[in-house]
Length: 502
Image (cartoon, rainbow, N blue to C red):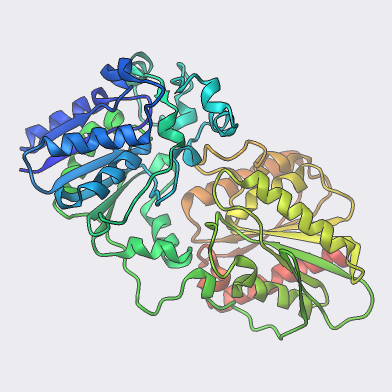
């Protein structure tokens, strides 16, 4: 008989699992919903010292009092932090860990980094933030649950249950870093994506194949994946389907991601073109790729995608992808520029925007650059950084380009500042030329933001020059070494250069 330990996210308690637990028991499993200290019917136990360690101990105590081997620990949202902490202390008791619409926190990570409510996160980041809240983050009010996750699929009754039963979250649980020794590293793992939150198995596969090396761990044969077509609270929106998924996960079922041993990560894949070498100079976080030409030349600043975890090596400005674009720009007579910026997580767009602005200022101050002829070229998740430049284009900005960009925060990206919405900013772009390269096999959530962007531009009378790669994937300029990819890259560079020289 499989035993499930069910631990829910912020503001909720064991009550939220009632229907899912019932389905599991009907199937012959043992289901043990856990209410963490300070929440649900235990809200009166919250105190100034209630923190992540308190919640880890809650899970450990339940594990110790269950007479069952190979427990399945299910952590929803924030609860994956205490679940992983407990598994690290009782690894011999754990058969599988299920990340239910939850992240994959590492040693030293605090849950606050992924709190989707921007106002709460920013307030808590202040030195006196937790004290201002009196040690407890207020539960969302009626109509505010969307700020903490997609409410897709929730009935009026389910939303009413959240409103009536929600309890304030002890602030110490969000700010205390998770400490892991790695003892539970051998446990089997399952990720369950609630697709209305924005993540899908296809996107996870793309991260494994083209993202930072740390995502390669998701291709371990002990890791499986499921999708649920619903929002962030599947135990309330689709309890039957969630129970079926948990039972299948416990049986070792689910989708597995496979990669060949010699498959290169995105950071090492070669560019689709082979532009000649050229002089390269580094100043701080900025690299200039210089053309063989006299006098000040126009410049193209290539803004990498992300988020890219801090500590990733090599950094993006050294990836063949971006150096290839910069060298090709130099071969066409422009100064190519690569830059490292601080988009290390979804909360860091403002910092990244400052880094890009500083890089552009440095480039324009270089005597080899024509300061009145600059283009900015954005890629993937870096596309959101185009918003500032589209909203109020300076006169020296001759073109904005974007390749397979994210042009509005994706579902579940609630932590992104509302300022970074190119779908809105494009309405005031005026006469600024925009060159957009689309991948025909783009991930559906990203493609939806591109469609929204084009519709907004059309309504505002903004002309967008589009270059399509019908059989191209996200990142086609390193992922798909085809004639169509090469044609698209050349065409996009030609368009940008045309606007720079006009």
